[in-house]
Image (cartoon, rainbow over the protein chains, first blue to last red):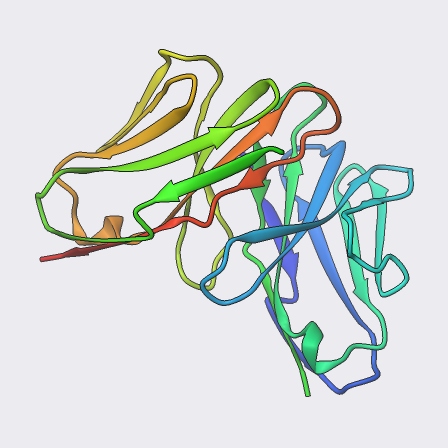
Length: 116
Length: 111
């Protein structure tokens, strides 16, 4: 199998606070993990790519100081949305590749973030 | 610039009415083309990877095919549970395993 989990599945926070989202590969080791956001009825937008033990690579237009990504182990990556604002409300989805050279990405169930 | 275009944007079928979804792509060296299914409020579920023109893969009522410019997802005798958004993505040679997604096709199958 290739199961990816995310926690929490949904979160509501107040404007100005920070929120951490965890992404875990449950039955495989993931050299690379990806973070996406998705707006209603739109496709996935890649935010950043993280490799275990190294700094994340952010896509153009994504603020790296606002969206902190840590990939501390081969099974865990975290996304922290710092000083969240209502415009950060979205559906955040992570994915993982099994190992280098294997190209499929397996996606987590997503985290719905609402900033009030 | 690498690009993926899916059509139609939305498709309504009667149960048992077969059809095809299209994914046209432009990429500087295709490493792989991927099909995913996404249900509302959930993450995408992996369906198929296609690597070279002429390749075909099947899973239950779904069959994916690939040419040098496009891919088709054929749905044979669909059932209401096949209703979902189907996403196509490509991965280019070189660099890391970045996926470039199309906008998706929203499929609704009615009994």
